[in-house]
Length: 299
Image (tube, helix red, strand yellow):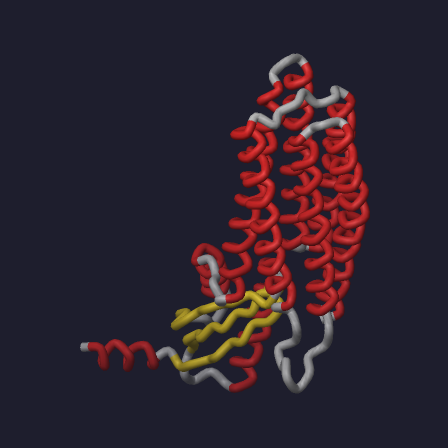
């Protein structure tokens, strides 16, 4: 458990750095977008504002997740992280639709003015900063083996590419293609909406105890490689935050002693933890003639 807590703390560091950087970038883009008359830069600023809220929500979720188990939460508070992500998805969808609506109104009503080319400098600097933030969070994610922080790093990279695209749009608009700035604002809003949908799908999948079959197949394969394991009668898994819990029933020789059965379960727990980072494995041992009895009952 201490190792898991240290990983969460490492992920928290990445979230804190992201919050600080996104606050600065969001303020700079929204303010400069207003003064330089760039709707795409303002839209990108609102995009970064959702990232601030997202990072704060995730940070709260991480801090809650590492609270110890209590009488009301015997399995701990690990699901606070996906709950925080679910809340974040609603925020992102709301902001995305707001930016999309305002951008469409500007294009339809003809409220399009060429932006100041200086806005491109702000957007370009933002793209560089976000790229280095992506590299930093990706490095932390690998050290912490954190799927959550790895997702944050991917969002950093997407934001960096968005800022670079905004730079190109502003430069093009300053050369007479004023519509390009407004069009990019719509594209940015769609990116916010898509990211919100993706976060919603991922968090709701985790909260509903969804688990990918390919991982179960990998676990089963490694369990069957262990000595004295004759068959895997059943295996299932679920996620608690970034932690994996596995329930497996194995079939062994019916004449095996209790100590031998215990040693097999210890070996399976160790293999799944070392190779697949499974936090907790519950192994149920049954005699191998159980499968024969099961097959007879089915006939």
